[in-house]
Image: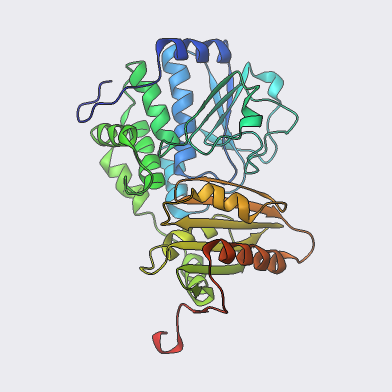
Length: 350
């Protein structure tokens, strides 16, 4: 599979492929991703499985935990990546020759991989957790790349395997959502993957995913977010309280960062005993993942890439509001903002 629009050296050499082959053989391979998976994780996980199958006839199993609730993500799961299985408890690792983590890393805090185990394979584009990667037999973690889907595209390119239309659509959509159509944190490698996948995808299925219908609860949550949002100079913050699904903070943060005066948006909410936070930035001086880790230091786990990040803080009793206030305080300090702020929707605007 050759690039037709742009030129960039593919770092996946024959030696790298042989290293991966040696680590995963003879199969089957268990492929895991982060909780509440997004399009990039769904696409890159199934792409790894199809690579193993097509290149080396190695069987695989895809397992995710948490919820897939966002309308587009549910449509993607059903139409493009139905091989993923939901399991609240992870399978017995002894039944597999290798366990792979895709779009996440050991110790990231957003997956259920046991802390006392070492995965055999890690492929991710988020900031590397070096101490947790040292013992991993095969690790490919490149935070300069805009999506994990791009990394998996490079493996297909290196093996001259052309993904079928369904897989090409999944990889394209995973890349598209993580980079906002190449507008956020993308590099030449992402552009190559984007335009070459565009020529291979199933356009009808892409439209079905992008235009997936949303339930009434979405509009209620959307309204609640706008009512809760407060402006602090160049920062906007919204605390949603208890949410009907854990990925709502990410969806709402994507909306809030579009405010023309905002340079950073923080959205927080609780679900099933966990405080979730999503951070979006237009800042170029610091990675959003680093900012998010600072916000939850000593409280929970966070990670991210470029202008997008998220985190989780386990809750005890009814402390969600208090922890949200503490994280908001840290956020405003980092942004250099003070004062009480003001509602994003003033009375005369409602």
